[in-house]
Image 1 (cartoon, rainbow, N blue to C red):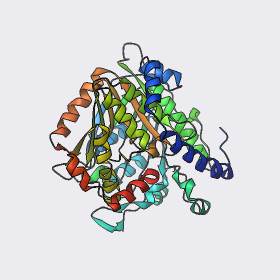
Image 2 (image 1 turned 180 degrees about the vertical axis):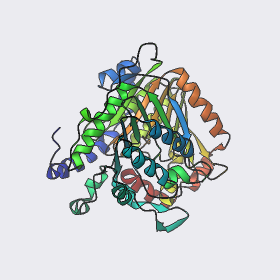
Image 3 (image 1 turned 45 degrees about the vertical axis):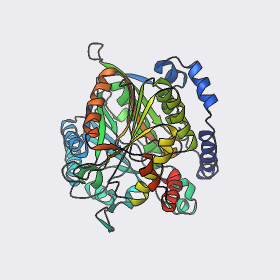
Image 4 (image 1 turned 135 degrees about the vertical axis):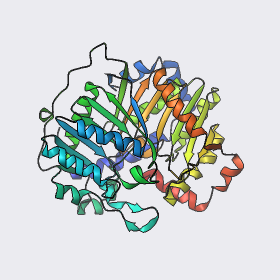
Length: 430
């Protein structure tokens, strides 16, 4: 695939951002009603928009950083041909070094290992000691000899053209031997895996055996790798697993692979608000709302849908928490019930979930905000299966034990000038 020149990107990306902001801010109730009139089902919605569906086993879900870290070490140990990893944040810390060392060991065993990590990794600070930088892992990967690519690196030209920096790879996915694929919100960094030590973040990675999904993720990995790496790779390097036998096929999943040149997140948002008839849940640590996003909630509430939004304490970054809490009043006024989750051990709820009527479920990296709709690369699985909904609901019940409703009076307390400033800033950077 031919990549556009830097000059072209400089012109297109700002225009795309402004156009996307305009479009997402112009979603009217009349347009939502027209979409409802035309809507048939999830299958037709995604098919019309070219979003692929793949055969899959039921997903295994790992709901904390430490749970996923344990499972990812098993996957690394069991790999026979290749391991492909894309993460937004990767650093070198006592909570992560075992992963990097094991990956290097498996390379010595002949397993192919490739990593893609976003340049945002350079800006990781110890939340308990804000003046302390937690080093990005890039230099350590070079020492270990592990091939990696830095997505959209912080070049001198990019520093003088800051809109280019909005093209970030926020995806988190793993592909093992062309057969197993996991997506979610967990990075290989200090906060995901080790803060607090008991759990890391509360978050989810959904793992499925799905050779078709693994192939699609391998293709997007290779395409992104070749856009930035001096040494190109091919999908032919990696073993391709046989398709699932019909006896092993337990469900299907839709793969959302969002890029600003091929946006899919808005289509996913639309589906959930179209499909929900009784109840819609959004668990979102980083919900920074545009008028159009609020309008979707208001329209669903007007139809009688109970819309629930869960935000979290312990974001550990003042700007993120103030920005998210500032929007609580907008959510309540739109008709949503807002929940505030307070972990008993101080863990942040980094989980990104959408669930309609305990059946339609989205799990991945997508936040309910403008950045995820536009310039950030994002990945999610979408299932239309009550068995997946049952598993997610069980986890949700565990979270609700430590969550409380937010009143309008409480929400008013967060409408500060500082909160307003950060809410605006996070529209583009959060």
